[in-house]
Image (tube, rainbow over all chains, first blue to last red; front, side):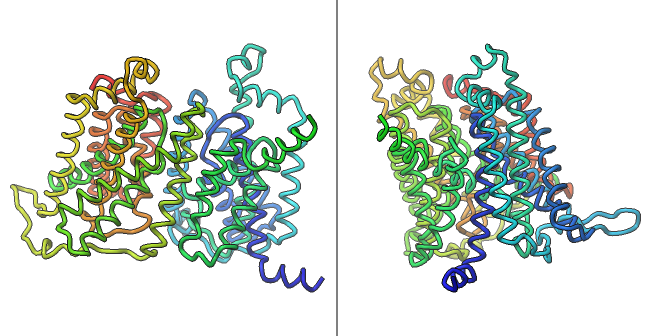
Length: 292
Length: 293
């Protein structure tokens, strides 16, 4: 037991990060499952992180309340974003959402504080970001959230909505043909992804000492995408697996010093070339083979 | 004041255009978005820096670095795109595999050069007096950068328009299967496309490094995303559109600075891109342009 306690004391930060990363990967996997490469997850995450941090710093709200409002805001933003991009597919959707993410980042950079009724109101803190956010997202809170999200997604995957999502992904015209409102499915899956990303963002803010706009830039978006692709998005398990593995790996090979990031690139390529469904699909394919 | 800003925009725009031309060429021929383009841009800047610091004359270092970038481009295609092409993996999976290559190139650069900013030794270039032309002034380095970028784009235009290789590239862009049936060697043409696109991207990297006399690991970040705005503006796959888009972006950025909106510059750029994508996804010049070049 002391061994476990020692291990936790030594790696608690990494353990917390893995939990947050897994939630972020789950959020992207929702829109990937609907066949949409919408790359705005880092922006949703950032919006929620700032909202929850500002509520905690300026209004001293308790953690749960800041998370709830932050998730509400990121969900609404995601649903609103779904409308203008409703006709975009494939690469064009990816580029438009990347552009949206950059606009959000620039706003975070420039809305440091505003003059309101003769007072200066602190908003995002500009390029220096916000510091002193209460560090109250404990490991328990993070993993309870992760379990909640994973459970919710598993339950959703058994509903008719999940069937509609799968059909929209495989063949949009067929989906229309059987009366599925493709626009509604796309909007709902983007909004659901926005809600989960918001949860991840709020937890990220409350598990870090400070947040800056670069935390939510394109580099973060790429990271989340890589976790999803490596783990696989056919089940919630894949995204969690990918985020966990790729968060641990760079730490495990610290001896490679500055070269260590190479492992994530090599693993990503290897998965795309040799296990296109992600690592979780390997396991499942194995299972099928055993049964048949 | 405005004349000078527009002139600065011209210099900036030439490099944006050079970068975007390679970006859009790959899209025009293969319909894939190559997110390793910016990593190659950075790698070439580091290669040129090493060669220049080892005593090679700058123009030669520039050409060698561009050639190295072209070879990296061919390797990129072999590793990340060719296997996916063989199994018809669509256009989104290659985008993700190019991120994998970008991560690998970035890690290698970081391992070799570390995270610190590096500088060229310009061999006294900065002491050459600035050139005055009516209301505008510019340095010889800026002029050389501008002329190199324009020269390379003219060469590309000639290659695409008037050579057998150019005709093959355009044929593959138009219809890959028909081109193969007519005897075009697909894999070799695609390799040549990657060599050209990546060497132009690499050249843009070297010129950017020289322009600011600074080479850093993350120098490719901003241009990677602004390059997207440029090729959307010009119409994805349109080489002429990318050139014009690059110059428009250069002008918009420098004018934003002149009018005191520099903090919101990038939001304007990406805002225009977003609106254009939603309202007119084919851009100002459409995708046909490469095929008709």
